[in-house]
Image (tube, rainbow, N blue to C red; front, top):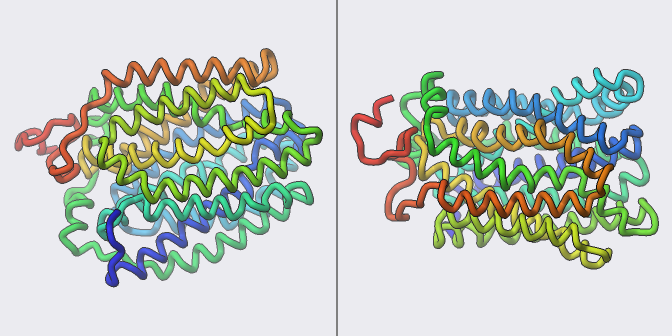
Length: 428
């Protein structure tokens, strides 16, 4: 684990607080979106799946745009200001716009909600994480040292979000808006020095142009990585979308299930927080590729175990494992991208190849998954998802690129086609 020095301590604390507050707002509100759509807006499983699918469409459109902007502006905070401002509008949007539209004009409500959620969270979180990754490398830190505070923020909000939800979801939304205002104040005070040698290793001198995106799309390594995301990350995140609805079925009342789900989400985020402290060391040791493959194994086994589970105690033990998967996946993804792709397209690769691809899964899989939940039950659907994850993990063993030695500086000599040490190839 890299050391936090006196020089970067203040900036580290501010960036960590921003990430903490951002995930706090997300957990307090959007983290319970499936429950809110079902219990408060009266939508069934298939329609909820459609909501997530439409959310995915707009997220897929916005994430590459956010990534391109991030690569274009470097460490400029303009995009983050917009995201935080949208987050601060959470309470009035959910209370006075989103729910009334869902109840009176369902299709319009779904579309308006998807636009807002993409601006503020579905695309916004990816931009914030990409910024945090660059910030960490510029300041000689591990990404996990900053990102772990997001897990803590989620855990703190989750510890009481279920209870607040049972009283009134409006309390969650108001709390999230208030936290976003504080986040905006901290962001205004954050300073990042881009004149250092480390900054030059992270931020490309020549800014991204559209031709670089086309080159990225022609890169075989890009599509091999997307294949992994489609087989493993899709199953991981889509299963989580309505997992809360499955979880509460193990309890005598929905209220009891909602409360326990909130408590376990706290445990999950706490585990994620702890894992971010040690996962960077593990991934540095075994390599990013093996880290990704290990995630696939965990996801497959957890989903199959969830489908076979018949006890509220067992499902409560399985639920927090998602935190381990999340931390290992994210650290491995950032290290894999830094190692195999040009720093000029760092954010674009993350938001297009990883984040946007995840939401392609929402478009393609969410509605069929919702149909299967209603048709054959959560149990059988999760077993199918688990088998798919294990199958694609096996395929990715052969398709993902082998990791380079840690002795080589990441991304400095690596271009869009993944070749290193080729002076001609580095001219884009």
